Amino acid sequence: MITIVRRFRRLLGAGRASLMTRYLVASLLTAIVIGIATVVGAVALSALLRNDISAATTAAVACALLAMLAGLMSYVSTLRGFDVSLDLLGTLRRRIADHLAMLPPGWFTAAHRGRASSVLNRGSIAVLGLPNHQLTPLIRAIIVPVTVIAGTAILDPLVAVVTVPSILLALAAMLLAQRVGTRRDGAVHRSEAELSDRIVEFAQGQETLRTGRPGSIGRDRLNAAFDRHRRAERAQVLSVIPAIASTHSIVQLAFLIVLLVVAGTAASGGLPADRAGTVLAALVAAFLALRPLGEAGTYGAALRMATAHLDEIDALLSERPLAVDTPAGYVPPAALLTAVGVSAAYGTTTVLDDVTLQVEEGSLTAVVGRSGSGKSTLAALLSRHLDPATGTIRVLGLDVRGMDAEQVGSHIALVTQESAVFAGTLRENVAIGRRTASDDELDDIAEKTGLTTLLDALPDRWDTAVGAGGRQLSGGERQRVALARALLTSAPILILDEPTSALDPETETLVLRTLLTLRRERTILLTTHRLAPIVAADRIIVMDRGRIVEQGTHDELRAQNGTYATFWRLRNQSEGWRISKSANVMD
Image (cartoon, rainbow, N blue to C red; front, side, top):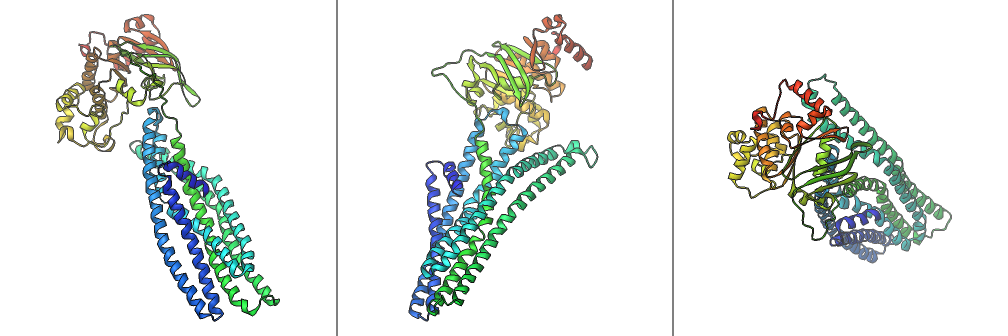
């Protein structure tokens, strides 16, 4: 419990940690007042049994007033708990959003996106209920019994002395349940993450899965994930039930022992008649004190499981952001893109190995190679969507590790095969990098990227909503939106990863003409399998197995009769036609 309090204070930040202090003070005082009210009630009962009506009346009135005070303080404590919850929820979501904005774009794999979504939603909601639903009941389950037993010692020390060991045993059982459950939490969270991935995979793959048999691999993988998650949760529950049940058993056994001790004392003549009422009142107080203690194990387990979500939040916030170390007074030179000795790996698999290249200002560079040769990884590194394991990448003469995301975005526009389209209007999606763009500027970009036909078909043109994830648009239309977005920016460098892979031939021709025109104004690097832009490129980089194996112009590489020449022949054969620098698309 102390650990969770410290974590709450840390997550709230120094300026808001006082919220947690006020909540804790209110909760502790409320529990103490409840305990005192119980003791005073026992005093009233003791006086009544002694037939001391005056003392019984006074104690009963005091008990009623204390009960009213406890109710008022409980209300205040609950409000303080909600203050902590709501403030922490807002703080966490802002911190997570700010932190995600600082992570390298390459971090956002499907698994990581699912994890971030889970933390923002399920984890945040779990944190919301921690103070009032788990922490407050646990505080009362511990503090009320301690207060009552301390007060009972005044009424009858014998009852208090016999009860104290049971409290210690119950707390020990609760701690044991915490330790046992913690060992199972990791398996549960891993199974939850896997299940989330399988559900998303199953939903997104319906078009493919429905072409197969009913018991397809997608359904099998989903069912297997459900089974593993069920087994992990069952193992977690079964592991803590004995410790939780033992807490209840200890409480019941403790009260039985107290009764036996008192009965034995009375039977041996050690209990004077004038103390009988006091002892009975003390027994009632002890019973009332021990009852909430029996629930401590349950509340502790609930608190532990909710606390596990804080572990997920901490893990997400500890993900390493893009490091920035910009030299003071640095002014970037003209547009230029270089990589020296760059290597990269996914886990233990090397995907780029000692890559060195230079892209001249105002040039069009084509990167070619078979699938898996490292083209997309190179594009991601050059745009700082990933950082290299070794080597240096310079954009505009500056090491990219000295540029933050905003600086990189102002100099480089990246278009990938799966560029994001957001819920909102077409205008909002295209003008992300230039929100002040006029309709004339947008229309000009639309004409260059083949969006005009789409615009004319939309009811509100630029102000038409495209749906979450651009679901109202086709794959080719989303790719055109991404191209238009990049071209609308003033970024001097365009990095395009298969920018026409989803376009029809007519639109592809239009886009390629636009790119050839733009190379007079911008530096362009594109990865592609298309022959037309490859032929028109000022320089061609050929990749194979993560290395650059050839560089040069189209004519130079064909004359070498190496990897590029083989690629050229195969592409010509597969497309069934030949292309040259005089082809119409280049005019």
